[in-house]
Length: 137
Image (cartoon, rainbow, N blue to C red):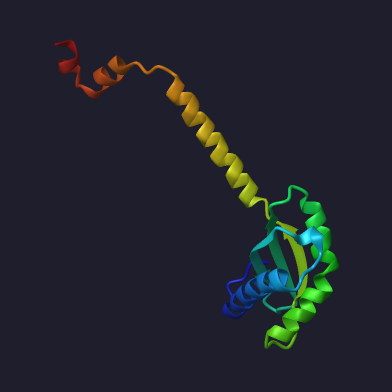
């Protein structure tokens, strides 16, 4: 759904900003506490928008249900704030990239920590760095 159309990109950016503001100021649903919108993809005809979100709560299904039930309210609030003829239909999707990135970062940190615990043989490194004539002499 990602589009290179400049108008779609501008509308997507504005939807992202407005949704964050609406969520912070207008939403009272406890299921959406801790939700953060990460991206919006709008079709070129501006009929549909995929809204990607993350949440600090591990139960992202609850947040998804809360956002889906508030989709009509969010769309009507967007209509009040945006100057476009038709506000896109909102489809919410959990963005797993943040969790995946945190997991990969943890794996890297763990590998580095394990590597530091292993003794390193510096003589092999020294002979590899020297040329063949230097290593014998």
